[in-house]
Length: 172
Image (cartoon, rainbow, N blue to C red; front, side, top):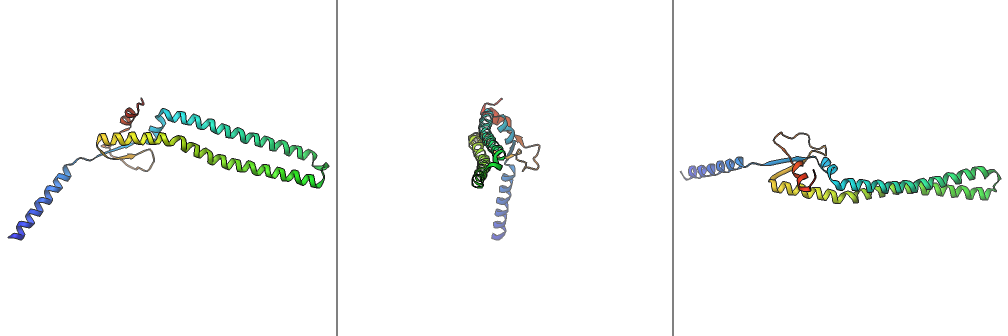
């Protein structure tokens, strides 16, 4: 009899617990973070600054290439009249210039990537904080990023919180 009573109590507790669990509503949301970032005014400023920086790098590279071409043409025009030692010195100089240009190109690409990261990090952090705030205020358990391409399916019951985050950031 005690065993039956114990089993009945455990069964009742389990049913009550699962009933409570089933009644609790979980809120899921989604947002396209790429769309949000493109709407943020800070993004346009960062893009303009990055383009300005890229043009500076391009200008420097162009100057280096122009100087190389000028010296190469000068070398070609006088190569036959130069002594072997001077010819060898000029060829070495041209080789070093070419190597500097290649090194500059590689370093400039890396530097441009770092500059982009540096400019975007505060914007991404601001957007993430706004998403976190909206999710907390709205009681969302999960918010999926539909802009990354990782999310394959979301229900029509999922709420797009982009309008709420835009309001939080003051974007129209």
